[in-house]
Image (cartoon, rainbow, N blue to C red):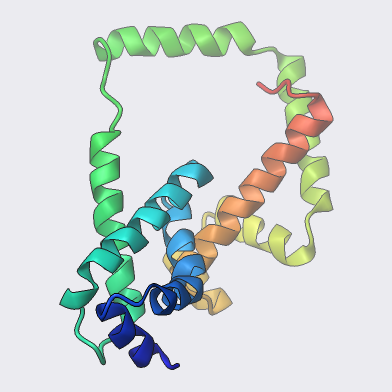
Length: 184
């Protein structure tokens, strides 16, 4: 069945047809959410909820229109609600927060730890392949805006942000493994 046939069957309550649509779009929906959330568990939960809402509202979907953007609009609405619900609430006054932050930074800072972390970062950067290292150089050393990077590398925004996210995770993991979980 093609996508329109799957949509029409799903509108009639066919779970197998809707399952095929989920298989086709789950990676895209998860990626859209993952680049905007800190936790892969949260993005998986919201992706699952996206498909539940989509199944409930499939009769509202106009066949013949692009299905992916419709799914992503549901995902973004759920994301907006999630972020509003889980927004951090400020504690105390800014002076109190600044003092707490300064105390925390001062307690863990030492010049030796800082140098170890920087040296380890350099070593971990050396382990990246050339394209990943180039992306880090352009984004963080040359401070190239994301919009310019997408044009330069000829990739879309979500692909770029996902790559950067994965590189940061890989560097973090490398540093933690090298330093035994002790970072400044």
